[in-house]
Image (tube, rainbow, N blue to C red; front, side, top):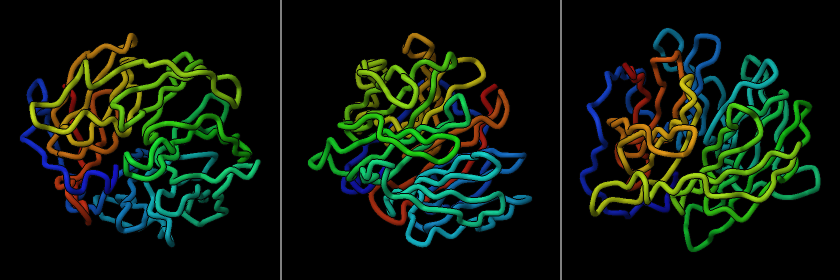
Length: 295
């Protein structure tokens, strides 16, 4: 989430429930996003530092230097990785060692990718990814959703969102959920091959999971389905993760120590890898990468 909120005044925020057991894996990361646990290793991006990072034995190792990418997320794909370049308005394909294979800024029909943000797996080696547009409500709606085949063909699947952010395919594979961030809503799109049908509002977080009085709205950032079938949503500006059940109702809220909680993924059924920032008022958006025990 991004410079839109640089001047926002934020009240003290709390979420329901006690703080889970946390362990800091990396302190002082510069706008960490894109939590990924792959083959036993922790990966994340540092948007401000323009790099993908791998934690190797607890050591901070630059896995890939973005060269103007300003990455917002990274995902494993076909033996390598794909990176969403929020600042570079492109997606980048890396091999298993972090070498850049190609970079695309348009889909196959020539549509520009407007600041790619987050990525998720489809069901056949394909990927879905969002492109948010400018981090300013006055310049929205610019948000897009794209589909990428296993072979790297990219097509625009949806547009007109108000800062498209996190996304996840429902477990039965027939629906794509997308965070429409500036409206605090989760939209549900029927999946029709590489295309998407008309969306419906699946959850209105401002109504069902509001932040405290005087605080920012609950802006949904990265999200992922857990082993329990619930959707776990990182909330920017809320110091929390909101967990929704299969009907889109609040199952629980998990407090985090990160005011701008940006992304999450499961390490195992009881442990989350979480990224986020402490100060959302402006660059360098210093934050942490943490593990959180759920039980």
